[in-house]
Structure formats: structure tokens, C-alpha cells
Length: 354
Image 1 (cartoon, rainbow, N blue to C red):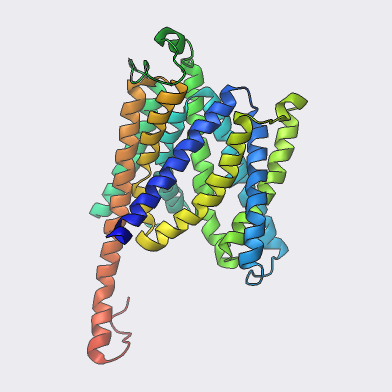
Image 2: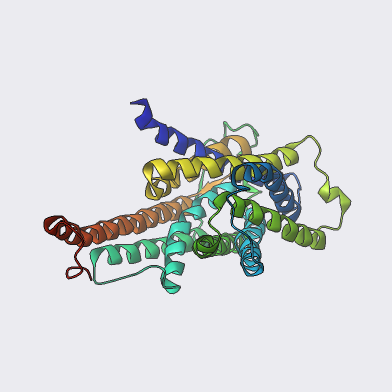
């Protein structure tokens, strides 16, 4: 019985870690940390954490790295990690930690959409799974539009009980302007697009360089160099590079070591035990945990439009996943006659295969 609940407990830990990521990142930006410097320090911490592990585990089994593969990994790191993290950093300055967690639910739908465009995924709108996927993507688009263009009334959830102990009027003054909010939403969406593109293209790179841990470490290392160049270009003041024993150092260490290092192993373990769909189905928990933590610690204001848009995003996520599951079940069912025929004839048969 304990073994049955282990994957669920691990998933709760994973999504709690990601909720902490949005919270601590936003908190670091609130105290004045430069977003580009933060990304550099985060990637550097992740690289220093992963290098000894990768060398210990995959040093002897990793295939040789050709120049063409290195170039592909460099481009993949730039668009999928460096750009994505820097864009989401700027977006969180405009919006909130809760919104960052909410828009993360668009990732599966965006990934599916890009996979269809690149002909890595099939979409048959004449079947119920295909229609379900289209509905899911449409709900995600509607959710993003709702969050961006409809604020609605502000919800006073936990405003009198959070740790910052501010008054409602003081918090209301911190609400971003409509223009800043819209910019933040679309920057978050753009970040998810680059992240989804990274997920799709990484599959092709893994075919030529199958060492997952070494590939992750190499991407973190290259992203550290790229992020440093960007940070130097946008942060010329030395004071912006200081960490000290404060929330800045805690955020960098947490995001670099815990988020990048620990969750890499935990997610791989969950996928091995329960499959990728089980992990993806629990993504909305990030939003729930982030809203609770943000309300208590940051005193963030939650608008009705954000809640409504988040519900549409979660609904879209489940529609896309449900369509994918049904499609896989149909494919397995189509392959079953071939297996039965092989068993009946005592060996493989080529007549039934299509």
C-alpha cells in the first residue's frame, strides 16, 4: 500500500518545489534583483551541481560529441533555456507568481501544437480524440485571453492573514497597470512557446546524443555562458551582481540546485513508475500551491479574471491529455489484431500489418 502512494507523494513534492520556484523568484525580483543576473546565477548553480553527478554517472557511457551535435545543443540551450528563463523573469516583474504558475498549464497544449506543425504529432479532426485536442487548445487560448484582457473584481482571499500584514489599500496600489499586465501575460506565453519548442526539438537531439544527464548538464553549462553575456549587457552596475546572505542567494540556490537538480531525478522516477501522463495531470497543483503561498507570504492580489482564466487553462490541459490518452488506446487496439495473428500462426505475419 505504501508503494502505491509513493508516486503521489513524490508528485506533491515536485509541484510544491515548482510553486516555491515561482514564489522565491518573484520575491527576489521584488527586493530589486536584476532578472538577467538572477538567470545567470541560477544556471551557474545548476551547472556546478550537475557536473560532478554527470561525470560520475555517464562519463564512460556518453557518446562522442561531434561539432554538429554541439552546435545543435548550443542553439537548443539558447532558445529553450536561456531565452525562456530570461523572458519569464521579465514577465514576473510585470505580473505575479500566481499568474506564472497559471500559464504553465499552457505548456502541454503549446507543445502539442508545435509538434503538429513540425509533423511530429498527428491530428485527425474526424475522430473524437482529435476533436478533444482541438477543444483543449481552444480552451487554453481562451484562458490566456481571459487572463490578459479581463481583470474583474479583486478577491480578498487571505489578505488579512498573510505574513506581510499589509492593508488592502496598500496592496491595491501594487496592482500592475493594465498595459503592464497584458505585456506580462504575453511574455509568459512567449516563454512557454520557447520552452515547448525546446521539448519538441530535444527529442531529435536525444536520438543522436542519448545521454540524458550529460545533455542536461551541457545545456546548463552553455546556458550559463549565454546568460552571462546577456546579464553583462543589461546589468552594468556592480551592486546588481551582489548576493550576500539574503533572499537573493536563497532564490538562486533553490532554483539552481533544488528545481534543476532534484526535480530532474524525481520527475524521471515518476515517469518511470507511472508514465508521463500521470505527471502532466498533476501540473495544476503548481497553481494551487502557488496561490496559497503567494497569498500568505507575498500578499498577492488575485483577480477574478485570473481565476477564471486559470480554470480554462486547466480544463484545456485535461482535454489535450484526455485526447492523447484515447488516441494511444486506439493505436494499441489497432495493433492488437497483428499480435493475435502472430500468436495464432506461431510467428510473425506480414499480411495483416499496415
